[in-house]
Structures are given as structure tokens and as C-alpha cells.
Length: 140
Image (cartoon, rainbow, N blue to C red):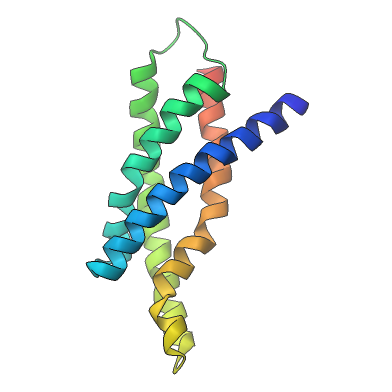
């Protein structure tokens, strides 16, 4: 149980760095370029996902040698992330739209609706990513 907790904390740390990359790019794409949530979320995630995968498989989780090569696990993780991004980006757009509608005359909240949606979704995806990465690294 202690090993699992330490892995989770380390994963949260590297995911936090990945999230900062993802979030920074996301804000630039939505606020500066005014792209939609869905496209921005997909584009901003790729560099972050790649960083988290590389560090997680080499520093956080034990790799099972001889089963599936690391590059194949990366492809599996990327496909999982693409599927997750489709679902999460659609949910994020819906949340941003709901926040905009509910904000009414509160312009500052309406302007931040895309950022608020991204922040709301992050904890769920981070926990899911931990378990998928652990499974890929240690059990496959």
C-alpha cells in the first residue's frame, strides 16, 4: 500500500508538470487564438501526454520486460488518451457552455468558462491516467 501511495504521489507530481504544459497551451489556444475547447484540449494534450508517459515508464512504474515493447505501450497510451480526449473535450465544451449560460451578467465568469471547465475535469482524468499507466507499465 505504501508503494502504491508513493507511486501515486510521484505520478501526481509529473502529471502536474504535464498539466502545466497542457493548461498553458490550452489557455493560449482558447484565450489568444479563440479556438474551441474541443480542438484546444486535443492539441494541448499531446506534448503533456508524451512527457508523462516517458517519465512514468522510466522513473515511476516498474516495466515488465519482454512482454510488449515500450513504443507499443506508448501507442496504446496515446490511443487511450485520444479516446479520453474525445470524451473529456466534449464534456469540457458542454461544461463551458453551461457555465456561460449560468454566469448570465457576470462577465468575468463567462470569460473564464473554458478554463473553469478544464479545471473541473482534471482530477478525474488524472486518477484515470494513473491507473491506466500503472496497468500498462506493470501488468502488460
